Length: 133
Image 1 (cartoon, rainbow, N blue to C red):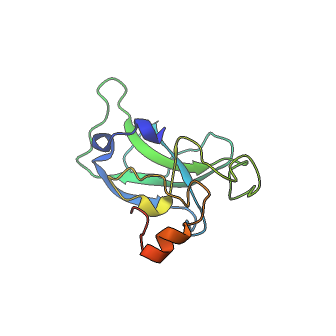
Image 2: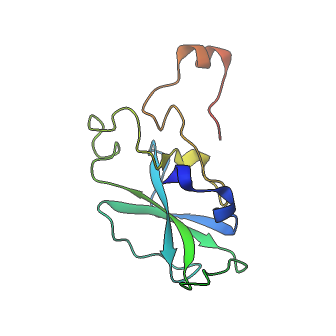
């Protein structure tokens, strides 16, 4: 879950690879998966679809016990807002969801009004307040 991802766990990320355009996605789910290497496309074993993944820098070290690398994977389930706008997550978002606009290598991202399903308030628009990046 994103709340459990610490920035020191993703400090060796070199790049985020997106498999689809995220500009129309209000949120993506993120998790840290144990993978056999630093850079190739990871296998995907969840319902739904993988939207992206992180590539690690050469300095990233594998786990001493398993020899695997912890890498972020970004994904969506069939009942997420992009597929069912009036469904379970018409407002609110899963615990592991973040706004993809707030993600970068080594930065875990955050929830925004957009990811939570709400429009910018009129007060925010009038004051020119923008969402966190």
